[in-house]
Length: 338
Ligand SMILES: [Zn+2]
Image (cartoon, rainbow, N blue to C red):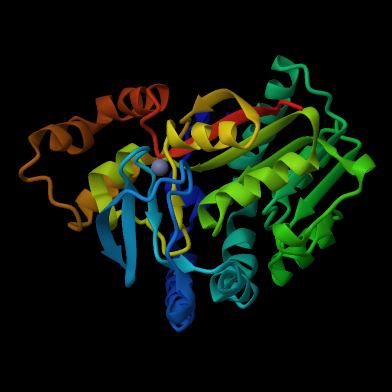
């Protein structure tokens, strides 16, 4: 899987192009906050409870934690309409399309997408799912579909990508790309897919429940559903809290290995596996310490593991996190039960 290959953050987020991304990020944040009069309060995106504990304030947004399933989420949050405007005009995605993806596409394909496709095919085999057609929701630059096409396994490969620049690049790669927000997409009764995947999409959505129900509509009976997202109870989130770089204003929902399966079950999926195969947690926290942004002078244990003994602890410590559902990158594999 993705993450059994050792790779560093620098491979997938090259430093020299990340500076311009910061400027784009601030522009997009200002645009989002200019719509704050249209933000709405929501119940827990996983279990629907209205009982929560205020947790952080970051980027002028309120993060709360569900008292029942510990999902961390932004509420009040931008409505679907506001999100659609913001993604359509996103400076960040435009920047990724123009600079970051081209600078890192080769490394991403090799180190992220190749293992992702390997994993999808392994799950298909393990759970006896036919590899006739695959739909990638939030296909971005089209790299997953491109990698999947190179395997000559799927007869039909489709990407849904609403951001115009990314959709254009995806089409230029020869990928069938639907340039619409997912909630506006529909397929005929005979066009259902054997496999539906979405990588790092659900954390961005106003209503994850509506999204999951829609994914179910796209799937054949017994079709395979693969969803990945940050684990809000993963190592770098729980250690760094609001200082964690992945705590991004675009991420409205931080599920965990307990709460996302709960949501999938509520929406009529049978959850087959919950995994946290991430490889970057320890490295991300270590970088924060080395840059002086995160102080461990009162935390001798973290200092030992992440600084003093790094040469020997790095790999086994990250393995421990990954194997115990404590890494911040989560995968759920599920089956459409009817
Ligand atoms: Zn909840």
